[in-house]
Length: 289
Ligand code: NDP
Image (cartoon, rainbow, N blue to C red):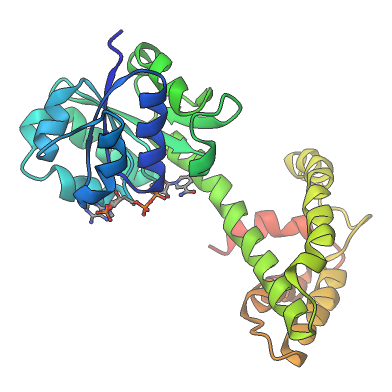
């Protein structure tokens, strides 16, 4: 297997990936819309391609690390002929449907598309403990596994459907962004009372660390369709979220985010589910979409 790779897209992620390949002795070709972002990598021995086409032609294995899939179409416009025979490992995040459409597009051009969803932030790229979802043709995944394991030591191949890796990534984002937003909300509220982010950090960390217990408790009940109100009830959630909304509003902190949660609880209560567990929201969310 050739120890030679192209990386297109040099944001923090692409730079970290190209750097990890250099660390492992790979011959690395890079391209980025803003060429100066390649400077440090070129100083370490990477080759800067003059065009996306040249970057594609340099290697069979091409890593894409762009802001989204539309940036891929923009970048590869005019270089379509060079896609044939290449394995494009797309580590840009986007929707499962965009990943499926991209796989068809690459295939029609004679190339192979592997979808990836990286769960690690840039400083942990290259770490043996971090993991990335992949989906798409198994043969291409297996053949390039040694190179993919340079990016993150662990890989989680989800199957042939190119949308699955994107879906698994998005499932993580569905949790990550609201969770970190909830943290920002708490810091803003604490700050309105003169309490610093550092002061509440241990309590928030403790709160997040305990979430696993809730997930372990709810998951089998949800899978069994059990939304009994024996441990928590939607009407309790309504009352509790009203306190959260008012505590924020009273302090002059924007309460739009907690209000959205309150609205969802209220809707469930109005539909007659006040005595059910808050997990009743799972089927309700699907019904009301
Ligand atoms: P950035 O947004 O910093 O970098 C995006 C890259 O896309 C840059 O190379 C940028 O080029 C390029 N780009 C943006 N718009 C266009 C365009 N219209 N045409 C061509 N190129 C374009 O993202 P990151 O490096 O942080 O992340 C890359 C991907 O990895 C994203 O999809 C992100 O969601 C995902 N990801 C990021 C993580 C993180 O912690 N940062 C963690 C896990 C996944 P230029 O330099 O010219 O602007």
